[in-house]
Image (tube, rainbow, N blue to C red; front, top):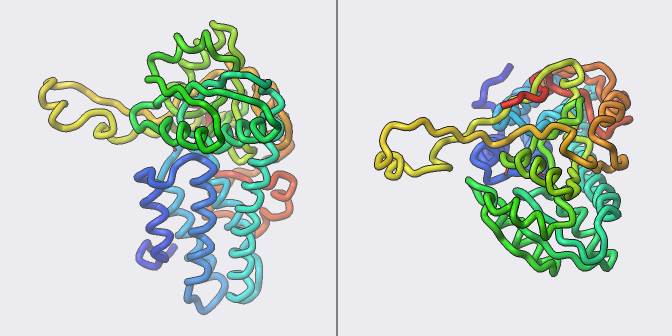
Length: 343
Ligand code: RUB
């Protein structure tokens, strides 16, 4: 396999942006990865199709190694790398750039479609409560607002990186009144909440949802308060390896996101941990809303079997056979490092 030195600068930049969270959120990461593969394909200077494919797979590997939890990333890589068909470099290049464009279009369409479905769960006058920043969750809110429903929002700040600020700003652009609260205030504000709306980084076969750290505590509190919670997630968030018992790796990020070196020195010897995601068991969730409809979490396995079938190779190892099976799903078969780890 070619080394990183052969990779196009946009692959390196995209990988760096994903790792540092300049590019973040599962759907956005997936779109950026597909774009980077297209840029790599346009730039590869290879003599034969096999050398071209090998460089593309190396690019896929580089992108894959950035963040481990969001399954949309390997799903995106597999979608594109599974379509490298052709007998000439020209043909393979065209196949890759077309696949990347198709993938981006499917993402947009899926998000709009699930937004329409999720909007039906929201009623005029509802107050929603959000956690982190999810483009899928906001698609439901946007569709509800476009249907003429008046909503207001309580937005959890979402420590340590405060993605709630992005959510607050996007909700304001939609004209939705926002109350921003610290994460630990969420239970108090559930008494004023009609619906909790969150996204997902990965969904396991048992209906567990892996999303930004704090989602599981919010879901338990929402259930205790009798507030419904929906998860808005395109089918690229479904993690097929969990069908075979693999667990999803929970990303541990740098402690500097939680505490500065000075603050740490003042406290004295402590261990600082910064898990980026947690696992919410299905019994605390009311519905998973996808572009293929809404599902009780426990029945999402049926959708996964329908979409994925059996295969689970790594994106950079995939041969050019994924396209046909994959067209059922809008996806391809998926890498095997997944599942629902209980942190
Ligand atoms: C983002 C996060 C989001 C999901 C879904 O975490 O947990 O809820 O990725 O987002 P991070 P989307 O900020 O660490 O990437 O609906 O946009 O795919």
